[in-house]
Length: 495
Ligand code: GAP
Image (cartoon, rainbow, N blue to C red; front, side, top):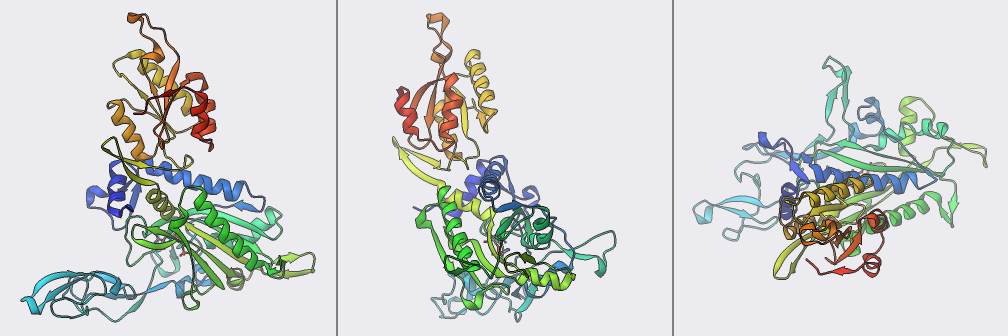
């Protein structure tokens, strides 16, 4: 059965992935804090994205532009005039809704046919008693809604000590513009030839009218964006270069999410209709994921043409062109933009990894994270915490492995319980130090210097010498199969 959002919210809080922001003050609407395991997971997503797209590709470089930018950037980009949603307000409870989404919500109704009884009616349906459809506020069921008004989604702020119009600027609503305004700096400094891309990871802010669904839509979030510049006069494999690269980036992006664990049946592509295309886009395809709330956008891959570079050239008076050596002329590059949300990617990886199963009559919750994503790679567990030599050895093993990976030590419960806890946070491997590892002089048993490694997914166990652990985990955490360990080292009964 697919996991529900409530299950993910509850697991996230209980196991230290994600907490409501400012919870002790009653929470801040749609803001979330990443706890100790959440921040590791988020870092891992950003790290593999940066490694795969920026460091490993010869045609890519990175950037970290500032969040606060010159206010004219947002005039030039079209955000001041176009980055709006139509919204309506309830005249009674003052709640605000997106005009185009108001019929997609369940609605409160005081039904005249049942002496004014209150009902909550599913989205889009009429009242089954009186047949009325929603006309009033869906939240309070009493207030009339205003006519739609355009509402700009950018957060305003003031630069400097005086709060006046001249000091007005915005928190960036996308990281992309920081890349466009640096196009020439990067191209010159790095001596780049087309096609090449600039990637950036950073916070973006949108005063969303209807945020919600946990970290799916928030007002502060992180983006991983690439602006890939191509020469629009070139052709590749018989296609205009921008169209060729657009297809390539769509395919690469889908493959990337699958490589790190999202199941193919939970991913699909959706082409934007002509009337929903952003003001800058020639074509946009969304990668959608089957979130617990249904199919929704995970990332967008847009062909932004030369819109942004031309706009910034016009507003700044600086040429943002590329000299085409072959044709001996200046061109304004076209831009392909694969743009993903870090938080949405995290939600998708979390939802896809979540599984419940029955093991020997007991429920096991397991997050089957790809090892690269798992917040903790190895947990080192002592079988008996009263035995100093076992505890000491376990700490020493932890310290050795922690030089390479994120590793924890835990002795706060019995071993079966400790395994289940690690399953629930997605730790791929556990190491158990027991009496045989250190020996028992009272019984005349000598130490074997070996530990038990347990594989999260199969729950199989193998007995491995302590000295071999770094090499074994180097292989396993680099994508090596458990079967190689199982065939090399003796098996131990499953727990
Ligand atoms: N530069 C293009 C751009 O910003 P977008 O489709 O508005 O395009 C790109 O945003 C991605 O950023 C989305 O696919 C989504 O993953 C993420 N995103 C956008 N708004 C978000 C929000 N309010 N909360 C969380 N993630 C968001």
